[in-house]
Length: 142
Image 1 (cartoon, rainbow, N blue to C red):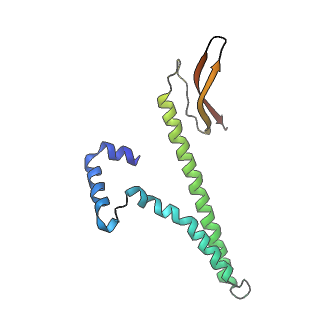
Image 2: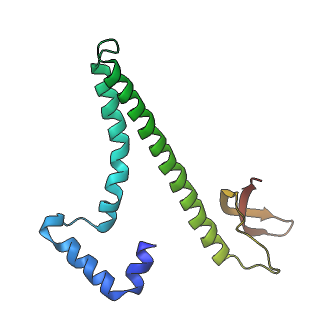
Image 3: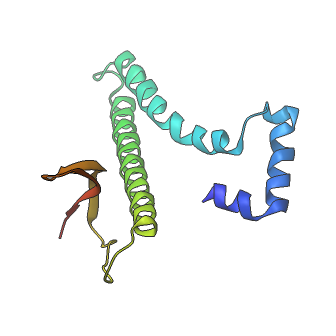
């Protein structure tokens, strides 16, 4: 989506280039800045676990329980982000396939719950020659 916006809007692309070339940004791209908060979340979970090891569950009961709850919440958020990222990637892949496939009759390729399992080239061997075919294996979850 970001790449589409950059490719279609010259002003946006120019502003991003100016931003990236700024010394305060350390020559990092906008994508690296967008990824940083997501990459930090698992680190927060690890830091909280290390902190919890330093606490005495008997003496620091409230602090220990609060830390355990924070660990649980961070883990839930990380799991949610991973699931959403996987779903987004699947959606982009399915859209790409839909745009590339030429069908002889109208067929709904993208259906909620349909998941791409594998795609690739297979060789169909007949008596006289080998025919190259492209196969898409999907799972439909209802």
